[in-house]
Length: 165
Image 1 (tube, rainbow, N blue to C red):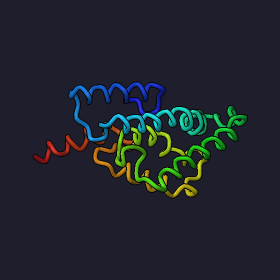
Image 2 (cartoon, helix red, strand yellow):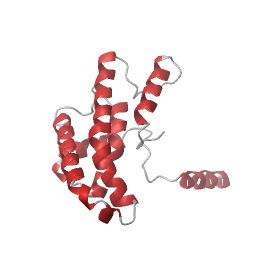
Image 3 (spheres, rainbow, N blue to C red):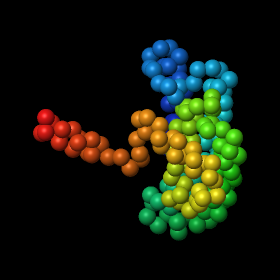
């Protein structure tokens, strides 16, 4: 599942459709149409406000060698617009534990992708305590897989279990 690509919204819509047809069973899929609309609103927000700012900053500042120098002209805009987006999230999360349906949903998954990386690319999340609390709640969800997780660790653990069984 591509969490940080442009295909994310299409993948989410596909999963919702699969759930609606009874083909998958996941607690974070949305049931009611109004809740689904609310989730889609936040997912579009992610694509319009987080991805082009925090996502771009993350890519150029952490993944591309020399990216800071290559994109110095864009950094100020990314930071300004990214902080504005984090402020919108902060206001919402000051009143709600999650983004849609009063529970963990696919909207939280979409928003978590870049938000949890923001501190790696010059965004100071200390000014957004509700966002930090939400990041902790999402990371505590069952089945959460950290971005730096490596499948080799799982293979090694399974191999160790086999040798001790």
